[in-house]
Length: 82
Image (cartoon, rainbow, N blue to C red; front, top):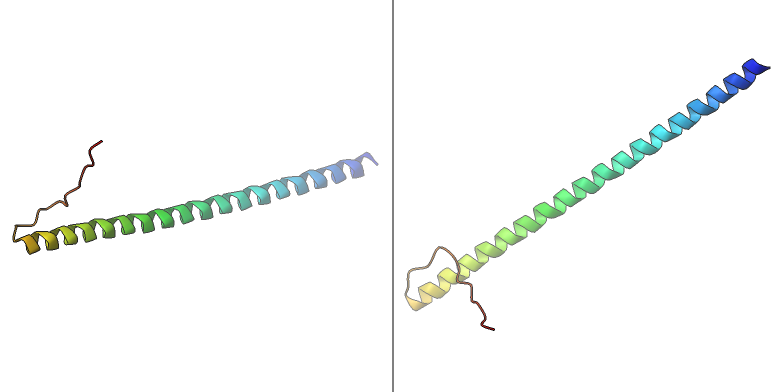
């Protein structure tokens, strides 16, 4: 009788271990998906920021051309006085 109790306990332990491994694998998969999503959003943000900088440079060049001046390499940033 003690053998069957022992084997039943081992089976339950093995089942618990398997369940734990599955839970860990699922958590790891979710973490990787979250990391990939964050990386994708960061890439999109960087592209958007680069496009904004490029548009600002283009606008500054157009203003300079309208005034007849040589366009600067960097757009002018106005500073408000307090």
